[in-house]
Length: 272
Image (cartoon, rainbow, N blue to C red; front, side, top):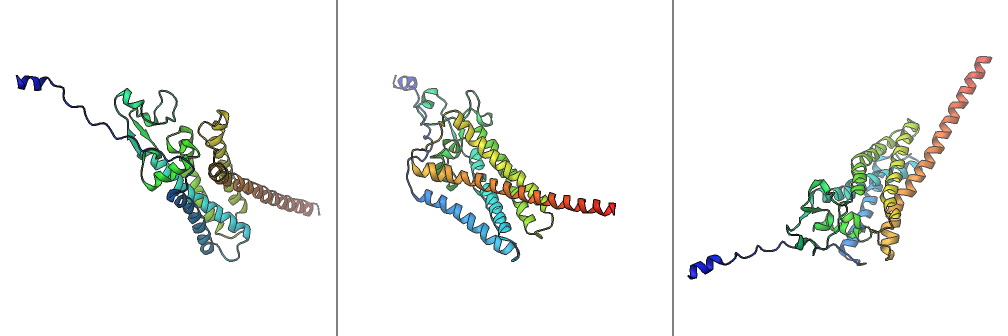
């Protein structure tokens, strides 16, 4: 009888899954905040240090600024935005199987209804669910823009181009700037125009969906989020590309004027 009663008893329920990592929130300046900002400064300092070795002493100030900017641009794309893609593809959290358990989780989906990142329905991907320094870095930025802690399809699509196209192109531009300043001027400016246009377009496509939908993922309530994270760091990739486009226009106009002058001289010589 005792055996029968024990047999009829239900087996103990399986232990619950651990909850997902709680994303960082609140205007808190801690070790992660400081390390993230120092990382940006370190990349800029590294770009400057390399410029002193890679460029000839006769290089003009404009060429030095262009070299430092494009090298800094490439390093940011590879180091920071590359780590963002790593989080999106390889950092995940397995959802509980029961719907009742799922609806109690504090998670945010960044895909449309019935659309799943990588087609996987039972896992959530992104920096919000990791504990590595790379995850913590993007959790810090996600306090200002939530999309960077998860898997927003527009952001990831742009970052794939940024890391695997814009980054290598920026390095190639740096390599071309090491050569003789007056050699292949138009070719150098052509590729700088391509990259600068892509950077501005990427910034527009990053923020235009937010502006058109009332900015549900942006937090501008804190000065650090608004002016440092959103305005300053994103503004760099607007101000410098616009300056590059302006300089490219001036350089190409000057080259065309010189070519027109040569054609005019040759034409007048023929008449003589």
